[in-house]
Image (cartoon, rainbow, N blue to C red; front, top):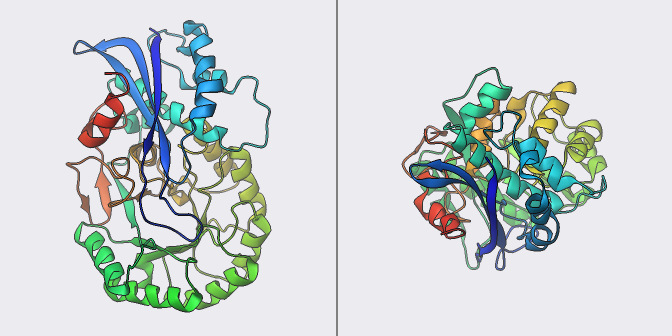
Length: 388
């Protein structure tokens, strides 16, 4: 078997929302289709991938470095030893050839986008959901039939008042979510506390609300928020400072006893390891949010999970950022603690299978081959247009 074509394009996911750091008025994503010569029902098997929200499309890197390396490679070097399926690890190594270590930048996003498409194709060729394939290969056959998900929202919108914020959060509860997340740091502390208390009036308890500062705070501000937030007993306090400021994160842990979360903007196993070594994260209560679609893909994520185990962390402390079906399959197949969800924003990329509802804070996985793109018809239509 072989890859016969690789297509890529840029798709807008612009929105008038903002968090504490950026607005999404010009946000884009890269989309990729990996076409193979394996036929199913008279059509070639195609794997699809895209990068997570929050990082712009990586078309320059894809067009200039990573896709040419795959196109120029000996096709036999990209498949497994049996010659009957693609080998994601060999494909990853081909893309990363001639790349220096360190300074990962956003090449990790480009590689992660292709990696998603490759794993989608691998599972489709094997005629398995990716979650099952991963469980069989890496998790002693143990697959979770449902995954905890929380609803991420609570962005700053132009003219959005407390009533509108409450209505948004109430809509998530009505759709089956038990935990919601909102943005902080884009207003004053007093304003954010008023927003938090408005949401708590809807969700009913602090452990049903997470807050996310998107790396906005310096240490004094992070500590001021920590002191104000701690009495609420929140689900977590997320990414208070710059993601690479491990000293800030470690110091903050001395001032906040509740659960904290970070990691969505760390794009390699090495950076994740530095967080574990130097960031003061506590394996009994804190959460890790590494997103495979931004951090070199599942091939690298497997290395990250190995590193976490070596440092005494359970995979159950991982709840990936991104709210997409790739992370959902990883969560189910490798025993993670859950997955983010975007019920209302970043569509059609956010969310899960159209016919699989959220029930009591958990969602099941469609039993279709691959990562489940075809179970989201609007998303499938966007990706299918790459090669049709």
